[in-house]
Amino acid sequence: MARRSAFRNRLKRLLLGLPLAFVLLTTAQVLVLKWVDPVGSSFMAGRMLDAWMDGDWRYRVDYRWRADTAISRQLPLAVVAAEDQRFPEHHGFDIAAMQRAYQGNQRGRKIRGGSTISQQLAKNLFLWSGRSYVRKALEAWYTLLIETFWSKRRILEVYVNVVEFGDGVYGAEAAARRYYGMSAGKLGTAQAARLAAVLPNPKKYSAAKPGPYVQRRSRGIQRQMQRLGGPSYLDDCCRR
Image 1 (tube, rainbow, N blue to C red):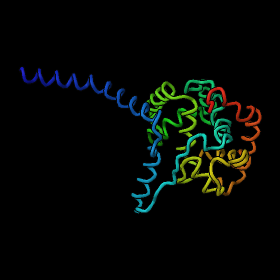
Image 2 (cartoon, helix red, strand yellow):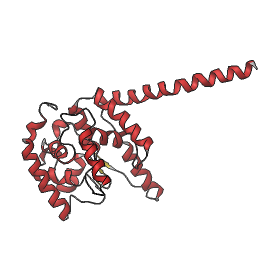
Image 3 (tube, rainbow, N blue to C red):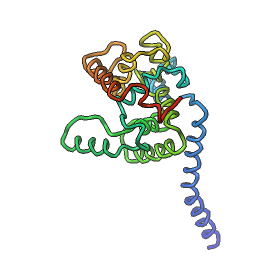
Image 4 (cartoon, helix red, strand yellow):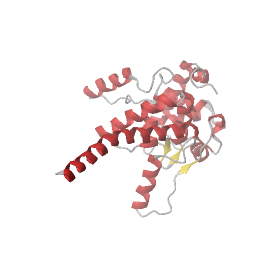
């Protein structure tokens, strides 16, 4: 009886300790990356694993980290114009955009989702693709941590470095070299807008050979960049 009671007590302490361990581990992950540039992301690891499972052992992702000062200011603006125009204002979750997305889905309309750049970064950096309540809950938790501990500038810097701009092409520098033969610091407005235009589905849409959808979306992003006021729109929240 005593042995059974001791086992139950140990099990209880273990179960009570798991949530605390999860909080400490995930918080440490986010805090470290506040100062340390990531060597990769969960999405990159998943893509390499897929290739290796298909027998392509030579496959490597194209990822080259660059500090935000080495990336054209047009690209963060283009990403914000395309994906999350209220990025400087919200704290990780755009409730109005989420409501519009939900209402559109209920009516059967295909519209842009309500995820913010912070949410997309949380998913790309720490989680996996797909849809499940568990992943969405983890995404929300990591988003909260990112917005709590990182500056808006750091969020944008990491996002434009790890987001996928084409199959296996991750980040501004790899995309600029692959598609335009230049460094990310030299990207112009049109080039940045075209990269942002493929973000809904970088495996389907191409920045190198843009079809009608990418061309049309790219022009719309450029117009929105002008309406926002150019790169100065991000100065208050993301001052260099």
